[in-house]
Amino acid sequence: MQSVKSLKILILLSWLAIILAHYFALIAAPTERTMGDIQRIFYFHVPSAWVSFLAFFIVCVASIQYLRRGEPSWDTLARTAAELGILFITLVLLTGPLWAKPVWNTFWTWDARLTTSFILWLTYIAYLMLRGYTLDPERGARFAAVFGIIGFVNVPLVYMSIRWWRTLHPAPVIGEGGGGGLAPGMIFPFIFALFAFTLLFITLLILRYRANTLERCIKEIKSR
Amino acid sequence: MRALRQIVFILSKDLLIELRSKEIVTSMLVFALMVVIVFNFIFDPGSREIKAVAPGILWVALIFAGNLGLSRSFAREMDQGKMQGLLLCPFDRSLIYIAKMLGNVLFMLLVALFISPVIFVLFGLSPGASVFPLAFVLLLGAVGLSAVGTLFATISAHTRAREVMLPILLFPVSVPVILAAAKSTVHLLDRGGAAETAAWIRILVAFDLIFVVLCYLLYEHVLEE
Image (cartoon, rainbow over all chains, first blue to last red; front, top):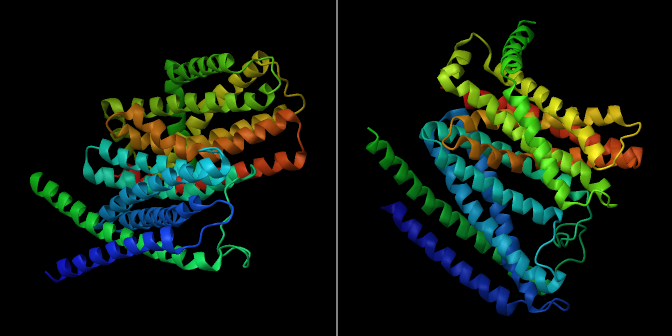
């Protein structure tokens, strides 16, 4: 009962955080000088990208743990993180073109980051399909774990191999090269958006993990 | 030494079956030629950009044909429980991976060595002095594709919808290898800077190493019964 109560608090907190993040991003943050209001999509685009990478990292770690220990709970965690990762990388792929059309005058370019995100999306769609197409669940979990590890190791390789072409995507504005970067008024909304999205991700991960665990238990009981 | 003998044992079994049935290499070759013919309609053979595009056509044809060969090589093991027979042999299971991979490399390389002169003739290109480096790039590309391909073919052979699953798993993961291989081929044909060509070949070697080691380590988890 205790866990249900704290879960409710967590849901409430992430709901509040997301609403506040919208306020900071859409109203409180200063308007960018050259791009105008369209730049505000950045407060949703970058946090979604960060959360999806976090999710795929969890898939990889949980897959390694599953292959080492063989406990089904690790497999459920990997599957849950993959589902959420796809959700957030889809948001990245949707918000990116919305921003790119007015700024770059094109919805899409085949630049390193864009192409890598697209391939990432395809990789984890394949990951979920692989699970769906394997009849024996235990075997499906093993296959998915193997693919989850290779798929994650593949990401930096894809990125590096595409990067040789000149890249059009704006360089990360924070953390690289120190100065310049974000205007002072934008830093707080951005950090807050990162926090809110991460909190939302953790909440969704826990909720979905519980649902997936229940589903697994029901399947086990049914197959007896 | 014993490991080497066991690898040769599995490999020669696969080669012997292939020598008698000839179904894998033949179907790969015909399919690769089809792909080349389709591309001829898309890109004008006389045009100037064909030099930049032809290596891409070569590698697209090879990955499609390779995909076909990989799925055949395991579909053959799956009927009549031959895979169980192979697993019952007192071999280290990772050796099955090495042997299977080498077999696939060989088939792919055969197709590559046949299809590339055809592409050069059909699209009016000449490799000039870089024939041997080109063959080396073909070998490296075949190794990279077979490294992941052999693992994924084993996985997809155990799923429903085998033929559909393999390309879906294989294509996203083979992007780095295909890119590096195609880029090396472009530079070799263009006689671009030697430094740049060498850099791309080194990248290709690095990708090959990463994938071979990773898939070798993970293979035993795929085979458990």
